[in-house]
Each structure stands twice: as C-alpha cells, then as structure tokens.
Length: 251
Length: 114
Image (cartoon, rainbow over all chains, first blue to last red; front, side, top):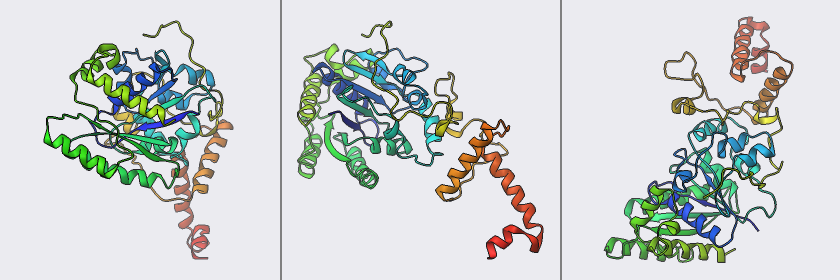
C-alpha cells in the first residue's frame, strides 16, 4: 500500500530538503518506487538531485494539467525508482489561486492520486512557514516526518508546528506525526546531547536515530548528487540509510 | 542519471483530473509559462501597489460563491465577454446602489427590512 509522507516543520534551515532527497534516494535504492514532491518555491529538490528542470513540469503544472498525459509529463525522472515533481516560483501563484477556491484545503488530496500500485511512497518536501499549500499537503498525507535541528529555535518551532498538526487533524483525522528526525547532531556538544534527550523523553515513539552533522551532506547537495553517490561511507549516508530502513519497516 | 529520451512515467490516470476546458480549473494560472514575475505571482496579474483596484475580502456563504462561479462560467460559455468574477461583483454593486437610490421602491431595502 502506498504511503504518503510530508517532510514538514514550519522552521526553516533544519534539513527538510536534505532529508527528503536522501530518504527518497535510500528508499529508491531499496527498490521502492518513490515520488518526491517539491512544495517549495525555491525549487531545490531538482538542484539537490542534479535534474535538469523543464518548462512544463512540476507540481503547479501537474495540478492544472488537463489530461493524464500532461500530468505524467510533469513528473521528472531523477534516478532509478525515484521521480520528482519540481517546485518553483509557479507555486506562489498556485497558492494565490488555491486561496480563491471553495474547497481550497483538499485540492492536492483530490488531484494528486497515483494509480493503484504505481508508487510505494509519495514524499512531500514542504517549504518552511505555514500557508494554504501547507494545509493542502497535511490534508493529502497520512504521516508527517519532522526534521528537528538540535538547537533551541528548532525545538521551539516544533512546539508551534505541533499545534498546526492538531489543527489540521480536524480536517484529516488520519494525520499522524510519525517520525521526529533529530538533525545536525554533534555528540561533542552538551546542547546537542541535552536536546536529543529532551526529544527522546517527550516523544519516545517518534524520535528516530539522529542525523549527525556531516559536511558531506551539503557538499553532495551542491554537486547535485545524493550522499550515497558522493560518499557512501559518510556518516550522513549511514544515518539516512538507517532512517530509510526504519521508515520502510513501518510499512 | 536519467536519460532524456525516456517516456514519461505512467503514474497518473484521469482520477482527480480537472474537467478538460471547464470545471473549477477554468481560471487556473498558466503554470507552464516562463519568466513568471515573483511579485505578480504573489499579488496576481495586474494587482500591484498603486493599482486603482484592491482585493476585498468579505464573508459570503459558500453557495453564493458557487453561484457566482457558475454565473461567470455560464457567461463565458455563452461567449459573453465578461472579464472576471470581480467585474460581475462590481456591476452587481453598481446595480445595488442604483436600486437603493429608488428610496421606498428599492427592492434591496425591502429585502433588508422584511
């Protein structure tokens, strides 16, 4: 059964796109068929994966497509088993349009419906902040995976984001905060260890093994490659592979 | 890395597709156009600082809004050169004010006071 996961938290700079791309790549390498949906106007997923963007491709084009052929053409192949619906500035206009619709909260849920058995995972890489597209995404998914940088502002951001999830649960009762992924973990820092302990105490079922700070992760993004392609021995590769196994085991 | 000559995947069929040509996607933005201006993307085409028109927000029942959509689409289908739903609302408000000027004979006044 296909799973729909939003990689989301309102706080920016915590590793949402890094997590979406490397989790998606790890699941794809395990043989799962994964569609990454970039919901950010920064359009970074295609850059992180080194995919050449195309004019009539991406989420905004997909949502306004008139035919199934147009929709499928909006999907870019990134790797074996890994496809992307790109983001981009068109999403800004799309949000304005969404705001004018009568059923504005469920348009994504109603329109992004893959064929039975076509995909194993649809992973939404959410933008920071909170807007009508965020609500649409959380209405379209069953699970939320929130990366949380082990720093005070990110933990405060998590508290605020939990209230957003509770609010959306009125519209989508199936929605669950399934995974909290501590990122930028540096075991040498007392603060890092302390915040991780706090998270583990507050959310024992949701907290995953932390993603360690690893410069190779940002290097890989800059090169348009996944961490597994740049340095499969790096701690970042090890951590994201472990995360993918955990997520996949819950299927 | 992907090859350029590959066919698109077949992930999606017609489920959840906007009705071709009509339906609620009638006034959707053209997501495929290039050179989209970031300010226009946020504010809407032609709606800029200094514009003579401003976006107004009022609470209206959903069915009223749906009727407005329907009226707009019906007029477009009949090839009536209506520019936008905003134009319809503007005309309706003009008619309302003209009606109110009729004093006791005003239908609007009668509706409000009944």
